[in-house]
Length: 212
Image 1 (cartoon, one colour):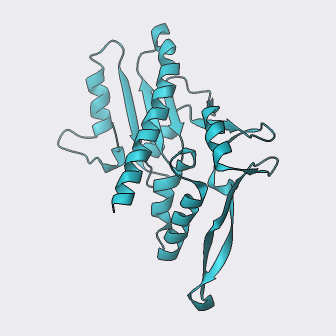
Image 2 (cartoon, rainbow, N blue to C red; image 1 turned 180 degrees about the horizontal axis):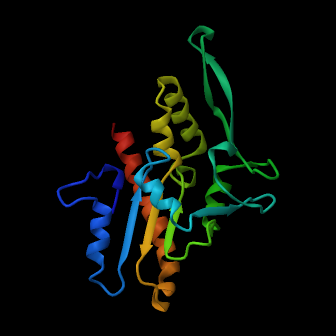
Image 3 (cartoon, helix red, strand yellow; image 1 turned 60 degrees about the vertical axis):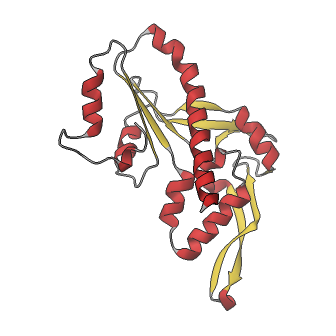
């Protein structure tokens, strides 16, 4: 189920509950829900909070510290515009730093370390729902400077919530109704599929953005 935040309740009720009921007719049902969250209480966020909450960790090319790519690790200067009346982020000074050793990570290093990354379960108590969270900081088609440039434009036009939704969050929740040994053998394949889905969606979003 793609972009569940755009779905509305119809005559048959909640689309997620309806999908769960319909999959009960299968011996090994699998429900995949993916969307960018709108706020901390929306549908996809609730689904993710009920999952094992996996995050994608990458190794620092300098100290090998394994960590999640977050916007807080992106540093930049601020520049004055409009005759000194306003300040916005200066994309030309943007750089990604390791949260442990504070060394700068180049674009080439970022792409390479993403290839070496792996999913980390942060809520191991949950075993029947797999949830994934990742941001556009992992996208090979978006540079750190281009992301900060979009952040600067969002800051200037006061549309920061839209920037956060588009660039910093994307959630997938996978509900496993029936757990089997065969299913566990598929987990690696599913992980690779998740990465492909992220890259395809970000690529489509990028094409739509440049076309506009």
